[in-house]
Image (cartoon, rainbow, N blue to C red; front, side, top):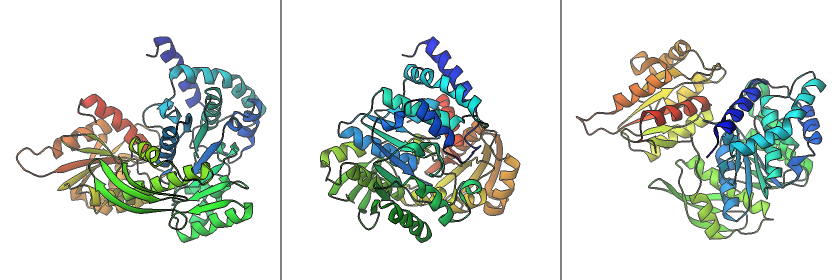
Length: 449
């Protein structure tokens, strides 16, 4: 149980961190984080790491690698972003969010150096750089046997790229963060390929041809050893099961059957194959214990990723925030759920390809409620309405300004006691929308899964 004093101290630290440069404000350089970790004694080099980049699937793949490593008996540290409900989610020890008291301890170690860095450089240490340093320190002080580190944005100049990863993983690449990463898959792949280090092992999920070419160019340039989805490893089969799916994976070294994965969607099965290949590579390409693999995957959770959180009616949360992610969500809803009708609740950031996302969702959503989270980045509801009307038609679009009221309206509309229709609710559009919806649904009912 966290004491009231620790809670107050944690919230004060959270406010201080959030007062720094936001994650959306990027100065593409490793100079500040490199100097900071040097001052801290290079904690990121105190343990081996698996470094994970890509456009979609990074967080889930990170959680899978973490769970598999934990099932082998290793102490794990996992750093992911962004969080859904609590800042503590970003830094996980043995699969669980870091304890507030340990977070405070790590912050106290780092804080003096943050102030020094702010004085030393023209641009202050950003929120994400500070959180990255905190994670490195926390994992060093625990200590962990393995760090599973998710890239924040891009790769080459991302703050996490001061690690010397034993294994680098790149999940599917799509168009996102184009203002920083480029407007083509080739440009984006080039930036993300920056995590590939000389002599390391590289795991490449299935890519579009132009991205694959750029990634393989980097592999050849640094002399890395590569395993590609569909070539050196693959998802051999999958079958829908209650609460998830049964999959068979051909890894780099072994074949693993009858794996229960408690997540929905073919994309999640592919993420599982990539995660398993990464763990095999970490252990030198040797075959893993099948029972550990089964236990590791059975324990995987991925909050906010096609997550069923509410029953009567069924409410699904999915943090799809780009067309690539929305396409995966639409395919999963179409192939793995049997709703007669689906009501969408949608709130997105203004800097995203909202039209592209809605085009992917339109075939599977019967109606759409547009709304907004309380983030300063949220697209105004009237702008969302205009775009949604063009894609869905005005007769299928409803506007509810407040997110909680939008969720209540969707749930009320989905409950139809006088019919046998099965009506589902899907809440999507951004990580913040999903995170805030999760908290709202917890308040609304004990029926939260």
